[in-house]
Length: 396
Image (tube, rainbow, N blue to C red; front, side, top):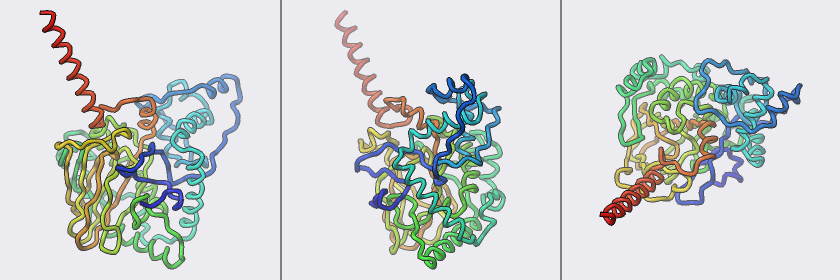
């Protein structure tokens, strides 16, 4: 397993059965934190000094502030999205006050050491963006009609559970598959990544890999595809996640980490058993010809139970098909078997919710989504009812 600190890498997978860490919300657009001016009146000072909690549901009619001019550890869109979840009395405060509160909330997920890594990553990314020349500029703007198959577009336009289920197959509880990408998009991604890797080799630029487990592949956000992927998440993945992952705050996805991974005899052969640093993961096979490398799943777990028992009904496998997507919870334990021949490339989008991570900090059990927490809850209920039944029988 590659070491995160030594590689100056900001994204990680949690291996099982190794020691676990609390997932941290990070974004590739890291930089030194912006410090807004001090509040201009006593009312704002009072609001600033209080500790706030995010609301579960966003203010859909609220128009968020623009944070494009703010240099921070997060992409500006994170603040615009998170703002809608602020308490109503904070929504009417100044932008600086709102920014202050959101920065404190997000700071729970980005300790000082990781902020330093985020700063280094921003400098790394700026060097790429200032020197790398894209090969297919049309790829950097999301074009649904050109990128996606018609059935997927129509389902999203319908925007109902019924329209989604027309194209989606639930292979196993919490594992959803559907046709998504046209061959042209897959070829464009292939070609752009290959061009980027040639540039890296020619310039002797030290590339950062997607995560702590994959030794090959590239972070798409690093060479300018972040805006396109952000739109993909907001307009196409969030509608699905809001229906199929409501317990993971699927409707409030507000940041992402997008990358490609490569598998072959001379690249990564397999991927160990792990969970992702995401709330919802989109995994789309781009091709090309290959055999083996099936995904295997073993149930959703919280941090406390990531190494826990796997129950028979949680065991599932999936064979990749070019252009077909699989959508699952980030904490759905999984891995990839050995690829036996050929070359396979996958597009991965880790979708994150700062709201979910904030709420999770105030919870002690997660039976609404963790299989082991649910099992323990059911066992407690069984013991309670058994004891109650025995008590009633003794009274008779």
